[in-house]
Image 1 (tube, helix red, strand yellow):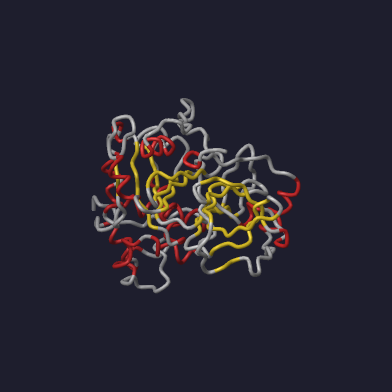
Image 2: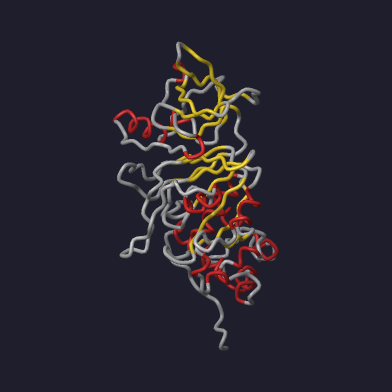
Length: 355
């Protein structure tokens, strides 16, 4: 039996049936789960990995496999995810998941990128459940740091009701990256600098996630698995390198992995994500995920102002950016999101500072 502290999820090639169900899900067909979800339970296991039709569940300090009850008429990885709490019964030496305990949070994303084993671009992909805190891991170098990736993940986490912390890994390689991420402290996002090579910041990260169910998210190659190795003080979790040609990380984690490192303290590691699609968000609500706009947007001339094509003189958010009261980097990230949704370029009407 595999040890639960380093239990790997599995990724298998999709069968014809899996593709069929993915299409049904994309089309909005409702999976029947009447009576499956319960508000609470005293005797339950925690899902640590899910493959096509089987869940691997941590129960009484042992990892067991379990199947969904037959009347649900669906496959396991459509409705069960790492972090879920499940109630089980034994039926002829087979563990059967009879109920799912109602979730506190569910982290999802819309797939914009594809992999060799998973080409379901455009489908909503649920990643993990019951997350207390998410650590957005970025690297100081290789792969390069992109604020727009951070901003998009902050949107997804805030929309999911999950607390966020930003981790700058490989901080010994940082030049101007430390200054670049300081803007997130200004919007009350905790920032931790770590280096697994130099043993920097690991205790700070432990303190931040202790007593919580945490998830590590970020691009491939930023060092998520190395950080888990450091937190667990062991070196048996597979890590990846960065391609010299593309400077992008290689996927080594192909599905979510679950680790327990202290009492009531767990980490879910996720596959590296190279792009995030936020097109499902409402255009008018994007600004709500940029809290530094709050004091300015209520002063705009137009109540429906999205601080994009509206004239500079009528938009106080634009004026706040021009006068240095709002981070230009964050505003540019916001504009790139709006451009992608509007499918047209930003009509830059900022005054010339030389005038």
